[in-house]
Length: 335
Image (cartoon, rainbow, N blue to C red; front, side):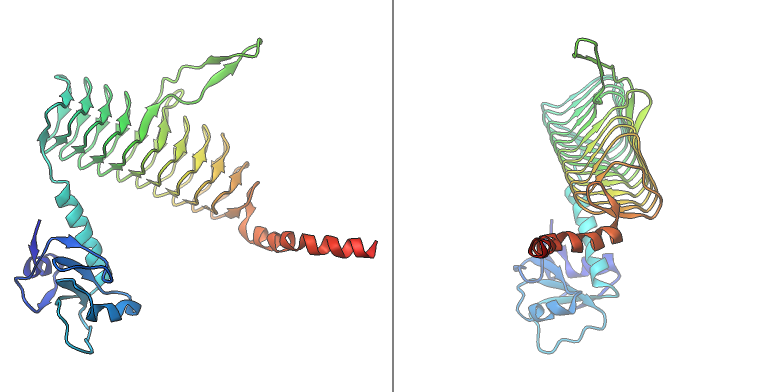
């Protein structure tokens, strides 16, 4: 896909300084940009790169004043960073502008596909599935029976969405993710064995959720495992059965949440955090990476450590912890 400086300026409500017919076909960082690419200058510390960049077009602030002649065509806007972000979104949507059912894909006759959908090679859409408008299902995706997916979603290759899962609109699910697999439910028996507890619930994912690669979200034992509106999950995250994650909460990679824990809205959970089951985590909670959470947490708390406790107290305690070897030596000398 190629775009001219004039087309891009029109998209961004900017003004062109230079050749309006200059064409670009890719987006790049200013220090790495090659001819035919578009970049931006927002942070002043990167200003020296604008004089040696090979980018054909650079987005700059409307008040930018070059200190010497430039080779690139400029597009002047109010906010270069925001404008470039808008272009990334536009470029991404254009890249996913595929429609139709590819050869080798299977769509059950009872399934319903909306307008402008795409189903890639070797993907399967099972019976009674309902797929909204403009959904892009990439190759080797499995959509189970009675699954419902809202409009404008992107499902990347290798994803498995199992029976009964409900997904809202504007969601992105990355490769290798499994949604709706059985929760980890087993009843101990007198002989020391474990009897499987049937997992008969579903997974509900609301609008605007993004799920990273190789995440697993288990179906509920009864009822639903629930990701509220705007939740963002990183790669390799485990969400157990009957967990609820509040709206606009973000969780970094390799974190795991055990069954039936309820997490509030607007929380920030760092990487490799472990949260045991049946807890209640309040709103606006922040958990530092590698924290181990074994008790419920109130609103607005900031925690760290294993077991996790107040972040400020942890930081103070850690100073003393690091000094323990010195203190022990002093004690030994006094002995």
